Length: 466
Image (cartoon, rainbow, N blue to C red):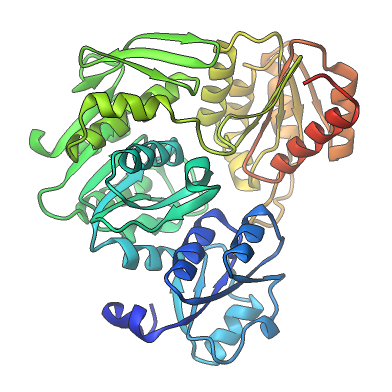
C-alpha cells in the first residue's frame, strides 16, 4: 500500500477505481464499496453477468483497459495480482501518484478488525466458505462475507455487508494473498501442489501456509483436513487446544461415517448425528464437516446447523446443474486434477448413463505440470472431449497444448477421447454422440462456462425435451 493510512482510508477516500473489476474477487470488493457509498468505477477486458450486476448497483464499468478510463480525480486504485506492469491504467495511476492497493490488501483492511473466519486450502475453499456463510446468515449472525463464487442466497453476488462482528472470507493462496489476513478461526481444506508460477515447490507452499497460520490472532483455532499429510505436518506442533481435525480417517476429531449417496443427495453421520446434503460427492461431505466445526466454535447448535446445511444448494459453477431432462448438463469450475476427479466421482454416484466430459485446461503452466494427473482423473469419464487451453494471465508455452493430456489419456484408457480446437466443433461433436440418459459436464476455470451456456441454448433451440 502506498501512502495510505489504514485507519483513515474510509474517511479520506471516496472515488475508487478497480482494474480487473469483473473478476469474482474484485467484484466482491466493488460491491462492498459501492454499498458503503463510495463512487466506484472499474474496467475489465470482457463484460459479463458480473459486470452487469455491478452496473445495476451503480458501478461504472468500462470494457478494456485504457488510460482515458481513469480520471485525474481518482483517489484510490485497486488492482488484482493478474494486472501487469504495462497496464495503461496502472501506469497512469503511478504517473499521477494516485494511491494504489492490491485487492488482497483491501480485503484485509475490511475484515481484519472483525472476528475473522478464513477458509483456506488448495480445494473446496469456495463451497466451504459458502456453507459457513449460509449457516451464519440463517441463524442471524449477520456476517460480512467475501467468497470466490456467485451465491443464490446472496442474490447472485459474492459479498455481503453484515452489521455483526463476524466475517467469513475465502483466503486465497494465489500470489500469497492470504498473508494479508489476521484470523480468529482458520479452515484449511487441503494443501497440494498448485500455482507453480508462484510457489517453487510444495515445501514453499507449505511454508507460506505456516506464515498464514502464524498471523492468527491470539486464542484462535485451526480446523484442518486430517487425511491430508501436508496439513497434518503443518499442524503437528500445534497444541490440541488450537486445532480440530476432520475427515474420514480414524485419527480425526470429527469423522464422517455411514456415507450414502442417492440421486444427488448425500447422507452421513457424525458425532452420533445424521446429516443430509442436497449437493453430491464425498468432497461436499468434507466441506460440510469443516463448516460444522466452525459453526460449533461460534455457538450454533447441531439442529440449527443441520436445518441450514440441508438447504444449501451449492455455488454457481461448482457442479451446477444447468439442464435437466432426458440428458443432464453440469457446469463445473474444477481445474486441478484432484478437483476433476472428485467432481466426476460425485457425478458417477448420481448413477447416470454415460458421463461425457468437455474439459478445458486452465493455464499452460498448470497443464504442463499436471497433464499426466489430468489424464488419470479424466478416465472417470466415458467420453472425453478436450478443448484448447484457456491461457488466462499466461503467454503460450511452446510445446504445451491439450494434446499432452490427449496423448497421455490414450496410453492409459480405452475410453473415447478427442481434441477439438473450436467451440463450434465441440457442439457439432456433441450433437453426433449425445444420447438419452447421458450426463454432460463442462469443466474448467476458463470460458468453457460460456460453451456450456451455448450448448444449453442450442439444445433448447432444437426443441430437446427438458
